[in-house]
Image (tube, rainbow, N blue to C red; front, side, top):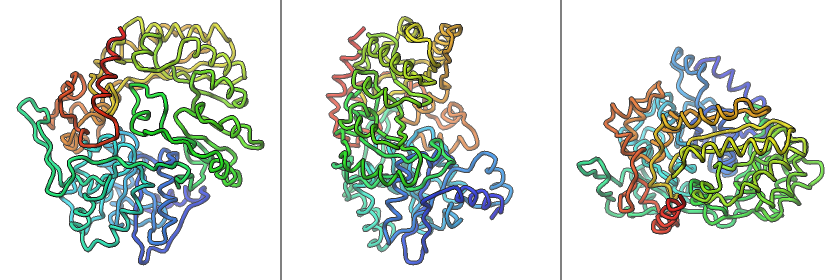
Length: 544
């Protein structure tokens, strides 16, 4: 093992409060893996919460593993060091279970990189009982695990609080791996990819799915009904994260607004809100551990007790964003002293906001923005998308026009635009809609930048359309994407890898799908009717 890599891990550990060290003897050993770097992974509340949840079990020892930084990859290669855990420095391939927590599709290539660094065969079919059981949880596992399904023995379709303890009981009682997998497929919410296969027609479209005897045709997504019972809390405080030294608290899960482009409002149904008493108790715990508390929830202005929480004395709260609405107006006064606050208009015109079901008006946006800037907030961040269904040049110019109106209304502070590319997502009304041509997306992004170039105090940042396309491929793809990921080794050239794998990017990304077409994720029952989503889609397209 490289002493440089060990020393770096120990340095990161020295900054932490809350790290758990356990004697592994007689316990199930779990390498909890986040397929990105330490600073990104440790900013993820779900990852932190699972770490804390597992280590509360006496029968389990859980240690963390992350994707090495770029500079460290060369050291791994030079020294032949196998990827190891933070706490004990044990190689990942010596754990009983390698558990991936996957939140973002563009981390899929990192899954392959981590398995290679750990000397674990990529495909489950190439592994034996001598290798760790490789499992996947996180939001990517319960909206469309198919692009990486061949890499995993088991995928957790739903929220971990409902499933993890039940699975570990099954793991301990299993005499061998085959017994474990066969009993897992009978457990609601557990998806065992090896018991399923897919057939394609001559055009390369999915013609049918096949399930082995005893395997359910549909996997039911499982959820925690009472969020106040959730054990997902911040386990470790450290300065070496994107939210340096902050204690994160989840106030609500799911969003009541159901924007048509957004998965959060669909796959986290029903919306659940943590009791005010439970949040207050968490805040009391956090006050002794961290200087700042970050409240997590997609629409916190809709949480009934949000003003009471923000009014707790002696505590600095951070909220990721505010909805442009009258509810948010009452929260702005609590934000005084914050360096930045975000709101997400998403589209530049009333028509396009109706298409995506955003349910906010231009007046809502301008009023909320003015209130934020009037409080002396240094930076107002505005989130928009380009490439939305039915979008026109007028809609793009509407983004610039709306920003100019906000600027004219207040000369205080800075305005930063974050413009992303629309990516169709499973279980949304737009799952059938094609992505916009990436060259056209670039031109639209450039148009926004040109229109705002000389507006004082305004900056424009946008994503790279090529990587938005990669996200789309991984979001909408099927099992053939595993071959693409294998060929992407050491490269982000997904287009070249797709061509080499015989995968049609055109068919997956830029083709409108029909209602009767079999989509890769159709085997998941997420509690949303296909007919309802199609009706929403048709309604959106009529708002031209």
